[in-house]
Image (cartoon, rainbow, N blue to C red):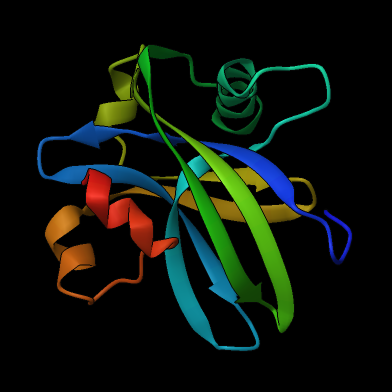
Length: 142
């Protein structure tokens, strides 16, 4: 976890399959709100965001990525669990190497001590506002 007042550098992978995208589901207990975000995680000292993206997918869901291409750098200032957060996001577009990931409904994985769910989400459900996508700048890439 990051320290208060710290700007965190993270890398996220946007994976699309037709009209759906692969996202991680999160929950904010203070806002009592479920949200969705592309998968990835923190960039460690001495590694590039490209390498960190591959490592995070490997660690979290044992997935290899291919066709990785850089999209953009986004800045996200937010409140989660009542605490302010600030992150710089290196955003990549990519695909899964193993076709089995495209067949999954959902996948349970561990992020540190927390258990999380990754799943395919219809992009139309995000755009309609039925499901909350964070950060909102992601809409520019869907």
